[in-house]
Length: 137
Image (cartoon, rainbow, N blue to C red; front, top):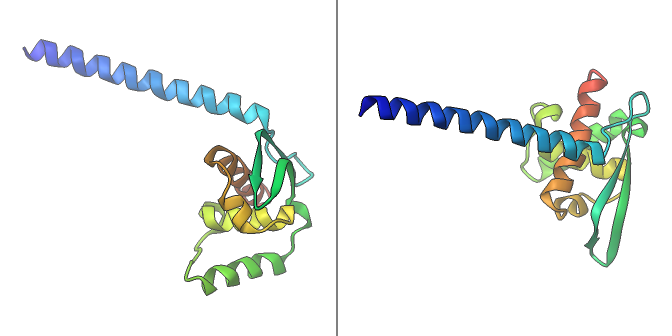
C-alpha cells in the first residue's frame, strides 16, 4: 500500500509540474499578442481581442505613455489613494497604484481600467509594473 501512495504522489508531482509548464507557456504566448513596454520608449499599446465597452465608449486599443508622466503624477496617485484609505508601500508591487498610473498614462479614468476584463487589466498593469522596474524607480 505504501508503494501505491509513493507512486500516486510522484504522479501528482509530475502532473503539477506539467500544469505549471503549460501555464507558463500560455502566459508567454499571450504576452506576444500585446508587447510589453517598448524598450526605451516607455510606451505600451494594448489591443483588445474583443472591443471593450464602458460608459458608452468602445475601446479597441489604448496607448499608455508612461514616459510622459512626472513626479507630480506619482504624488497625485498616492494622494488619491490616501483619500480613499488605500495605501501603497511600493508602487512596483501595488496593483492598485499600477492601475491608477496606467489610467493617467492613457488619459482615461481609473474606473475604466477597473471595469476591464481581468486578462486585459493584468496585461496593462503588468506593463505599468515593468516600466516602474525597468526605469529603476
